[in-house]
Image 1 (spheres, rainbow, N blue to C red):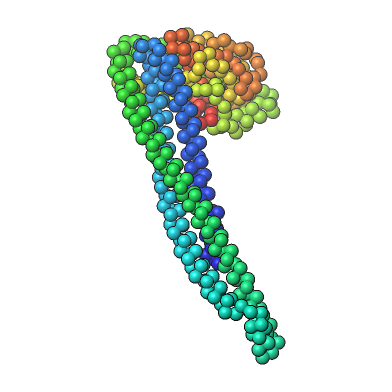
Image 2: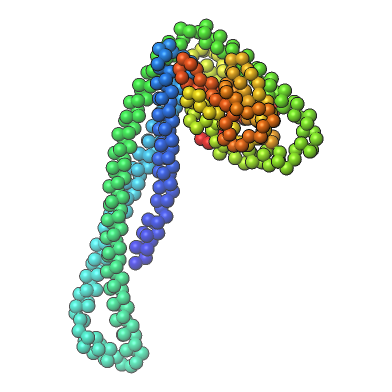
Length: 391
């Protein structure tokens, strides 16, 4: 039947985008859950020190964002599952109606076959023809009835199998839906607890306004020194780049390769959580105070290895008071800057490979947590690293 074929077509095509969306959501949830686990590990380390710190607050803030993302993904998953359950229920009802119609048609065919069951009756029917053409048409008619009867029987079996398959899928979706609802309830409960911790941390840190302002000033000085080092390097090399020989095939290949991997570049550490985003934003505690970040601050494990995110040449290594050591690597027209690192493993002039270790993230001895800063420059134009590394 045409309708059965159409149903097969719908079953084959309609769920594709939906299924892909569910898979993407599940992958996103798994990634977020891993990041939440890591942020919890970092918090456990910082909470060993009873004194509230700005870094602890930043991790709590990141954790809240991750938890909200997880709840949002779970809610979308719930809505999609509810829609699919409704669609499958309608489909199963429609298939059941078709099955009843098929059975009625098939019973009529069986009745007709029973009434004309003997071979003699069929022969009489054929020999009663007025001429050969009529006999041939009657034979073809009989053959078509036999084939149609077989097809109707197969359609009944196929429809029954489709119903069974859809029922099984429906039951699985209902179980997943219930699990997602329970998961959402748990995550909402955790979110409320984390928001409470975040607010308490803010109250505690407000009592250290003088210390926080001193930290801001120290960071500004460190950033100014790092900005000068970057600007000096760009100015020095701008003179060299007037010579076309400097922009050789390797140089152009590095530029194209780095740019072509935008959004796919690896993280400098195997684990990491962005605790301070790119650009200018409000200080989490001090009202009216703006914080500018030319890169992203990443919290990681103790003494984590920091690696180059792409192959290139080490152009500068500078010591920055308050930010330990910064390594500047050129990738054609692009620069990556890794600051607040220690135990540097490279030297100026080294050609490094992608994911080659260049040093260690500075580890705060009081918390056992590593932190470093990543910057990306397209010559003198600063970039948001979050747009370049893997999400």
